Image 1 (cartoon, rainbow, N blue to C red):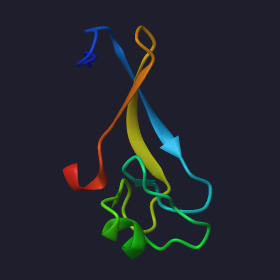
Image 2: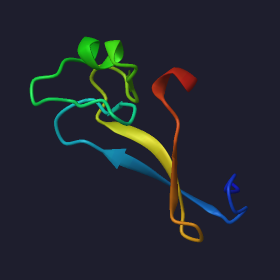
Image 3: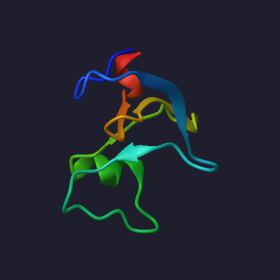
Length: 75
């Protein structure tokens, strides 16, 4: 796959969480120690993995050092 930023080659891989699903949260929003999925979603965040999945598919470009991740809803 081609990097959308520099057109280098993307390397397939995974982001791994040993315990919990993986979330994305906007800059400026804080996720406390006991933050729930619903609390993060109220702040504009979303789950990158389904409820019990602990890995998110990702592609890494070694040329521009960028990581591209697609959320579970895109599958």
